Amino acid sequence: MAISRMRRVNEVMRQVISDMITSDLSDPRLDMVTVNSVDTSPDLRHAKVFITVLGDEEAREDALAGLKGAHGLIQGRVARETTMKHTPTLTFEYDESVETGLRIAALLDSDADSEPDSGRNESSD
Figure (tube, rainbow, N blue to C red):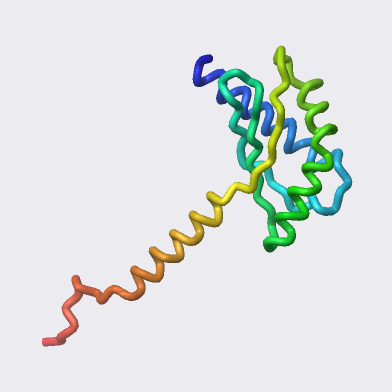
């Protein structure tokens, strides 16, 4: 399958799932859930839905439990709103890339702060 078609499939699925979570599900555990991306297998049988959650580890676990409980509803919405022959089986996973990026940025900032200013001349003539 063409790469551009897979991107479109992933984006359509991300949008449908995101809209469902934000507007149609009334579970308070899903209030701070953001759908970052969807990665669909080339055969369109499986799709990993990557999410982030504002909050701590407990909020993350609660959100994943809420999504697992609403799996059938979300799966049905994807089936109705997409025109694919087979609806991929959805699995929800926490996307750690945001946290990883923040840790790397913090490390780079702390490293930059600890380096001496080697390009400046400290003496005044």
